[in-house]
Image (cartoon, rainbow, N blue to C red; front, side, top):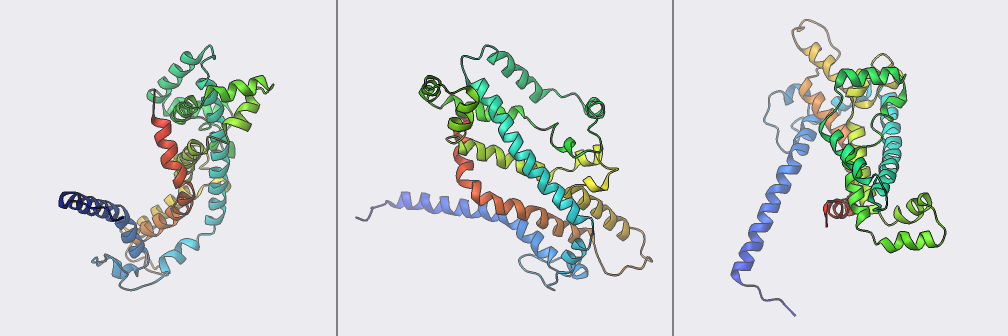
Length: 293
């Protein structure tokens, strides 16, 4: 049976779709623009006037980036860092969040208050560097994992989600003889996929884009360089080459504009490929984790 809609309701729907279309276009267009710049010939791109499609199509910018021999090693380090940190961080934050969600935990408020303080007060750059040095984490892969293993923000999101689960689940498991670790791994985690996927996406994006800790702690060890750090160095090389050295012979014409656009597309694509698989959990986990009774 067709639903009769008044003119006012139709007008509201039209305005709603127009607003969503404008919002979607302003969100997507920057990526389209960067893609067009990266696929256009460098000298022609510097003239400007590129909007929706390349004027002189070429893969030259991508070939220049992939000629960097250290890029493969750095990509492997970034993938390993992202996967290991995501798995360990979700598990560690989940365990802490589960403990804090239990009303029978004696120090629940004290630990929660301590975590809140860490969200607003940090030790600072120099004390943190000295701590990393004294822990013998300099020039090691572990420096990418250990310092960021737990986050107060992620713990609170997961704790709020766990608090909304029925107490009967845990109590019946206690009656059946299960301990807290078994309850968390075999009962709580399987039914908490939305919030786990949400936190996993947060951690994965953060780790994939990280490069500053590489610069601080592992800059002397090229074998431990991550992708973002190598790309950062590549941009600096291009900028130095194209600024004030006009007489220097180069094998091809490159510019910071096209190289930055190319690198942005390359580092964004992996996250765009992962996001659709987690999107259905992302909204649900974020909204449920944000509610508070």
